[in-house]
Image (cartoon, rainbow, N blue to C red; front, side):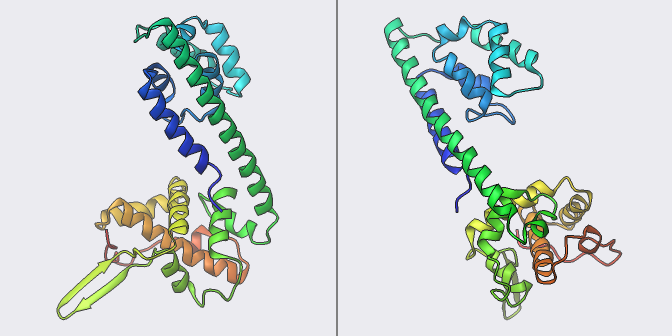
Length: 276
């Protein structure tokens, strides 16, 4: 099962490429900001009304506020409307009227495709979350920090619910690619990260750990690994490796995640850094 937003993300990148190629940079400036993209509900609602620079310039702040509210936005509506109004009324490139109108129709067609893909992705995400919530292991998986219903469904889907599939936690870690490989030859000893692994599980693991970093115990462990010499990717893999060991134990014993057991206070020497 692919992540629900994959198709929408691919189409969003295609829309960005098309908008760059038809001088619609004002749209990219309006919505290519942190936390907001062209596939957001706000962007799709506004783009449907502002397919070309001339039409966009006629949108008033009151109209923009109404569109933003209708799209579902609840915070900073006045600030957003004023910012969009400033972008849309600023000087920008124009084509001849007929060409600009044709490009506006193309933009509307692209937005319709993107809106359909995003709605389908949202429906699939809701269905996946509902199905995952009915699984008997859902409470255990989501007890871990940073893992929600979609990431949890991916992780559970990749590792399966057959308790005998992995003889021990090491087998699961190797399958996910989080466990390092030590290569010894004569006096040479090199530690590598695994390249042969379940790429989908590894990708879901990165999302999982990235979401878990705000947790105090997780952040402290990450900082310790970085201080010990790990690069960012190696520290993330180390956390993923630890979480997989905990997940295997919790699934085998039916326990929920306990951060105190997963990250006990350590006075022991730091372990050697993992492979970068």
